[in-house]
Length: 174
Image 1: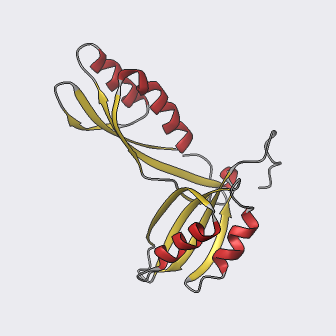
Image 2: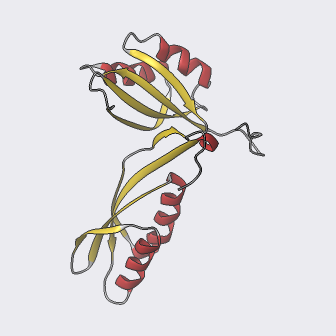
């Protein structure tokens, strides 16, 4: 399915899926390459694949720090890198996890819990004046949730970084 590029300026961030050997030091070599070249990593997630010999890195690259082609060429030079593919947001499924601790006292507790429910999140920890929640969704939706919860008082936040896979041929949003 070939869609025309979206209107407006080209995207600033590009998602790369990088298959690497699952060996000690590979992540350090990739990070070192980015640091040496002055490339900015917007997001990074890594874990073994279904085959323990390999890991998949999902790297969101800020292309204002370097052209995407240059980043890919440099990554391809690393011995432990086996395959690199760019994941177009229109042809891939992206998710991220966020943990948030939010002030939720008195009447405002129900408002916070209502927002979390609207984003299909769940409560992980419940205190007298605060609540810690978990939400998994597309990164832009997590941005929206964060903005909606900010007025309540975000006490702590941790996001995992984006993970992504190509969309299936006959697939669509589920």
